[in-house]
Length: 351
Ligand SMILES: Nc1ncnc2c1ncn2[C@@H]1O[C@H](COP(=O)(O)OP(=O)(O)O)[C@@H](O)[C@H]1O
Ligand SMILES: [Mg+2]
Image (cartoon, rainbow, N blue to C red; front, side):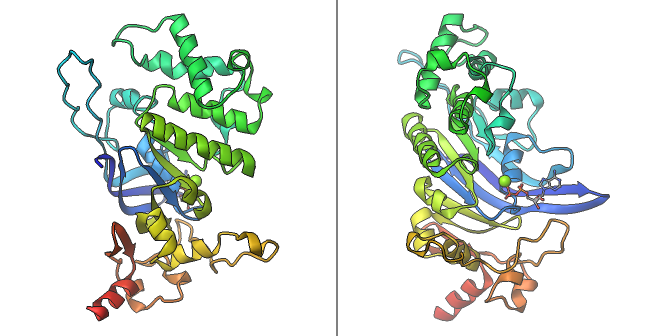
């Protein structure tokens, strides 16, 4: 599978109260074409700002201070009687011009946030909001040729059907506050996918929804992924939710990656103590009512001094080495990497 996006040694700095801090520290991962990649970690681990950096939406206090975000735009589709066109050269999204960014956001890559109300305009009818990216990018029409009113209307109806909004014709005329939370999140997903982006970043898209609606939204994302081969980056603090739709997982802790691998492999054979803690925190049905077995301690704030292995203060296995050196990736299974000194030490002893 080819890579659509490559995050290489990405570092994000924070300027706060006159100080400079590191929020995301030298992380690397790739998003492959057609896959659903999960990014998991407790609140405050840097999941959102990493993805905001991909979108070019970091606020004034935050900036990319190192590394690259390489986007490989696939070759444009051509008609059968046309010769194939070459793929455009890869671009570094950490350094693109405003013009290139305009071409990419909404058309190549788009994002869905946790709280649908924050990304909807309360004063605009939802049909009009869903049509906006189409008007901007005019997909499927030749460059410079505007879509007709009828064409836009038909595409909006189709997008609403695609995300499972019933009675689309009537609902187009409604305002966001007239819809339920689940329906609003569907509207947001319709806006994000109407131009059929190659990459959809969904940042905790179901966290604000109740369990039944959450299931429906997960099923919808999976269908979009299958139907249009849209790659999805699915961000969540909850491994149980990640497990429902993701092919692979990146586990983040305090601005670093601590483990990556196929979802099943990670759940069945977690390597990092942090991942093990996340798995223990998944509530089990038979244990309803009993307190969650949690990981003692908490994610350090960005202004706190962090150990080279940021998990060391909470880790039962931590040794001096973990406070002296950044752990390298160790391959523990097929495509399964763990960043832990204790694992590399154990592997060293076995060989
Ligand atoms: N605008 C900001 N200014 C200062 N610190 C920020 C800002 N945005 C996020 N942070 C800090 O960066 C860290 C990562 O935040 P975030 O990416 O939102 O975490 P997550 O999405 O994993 O919960 C947190 O410690 C958070 O407090
Ligand atoms: Mg977040």
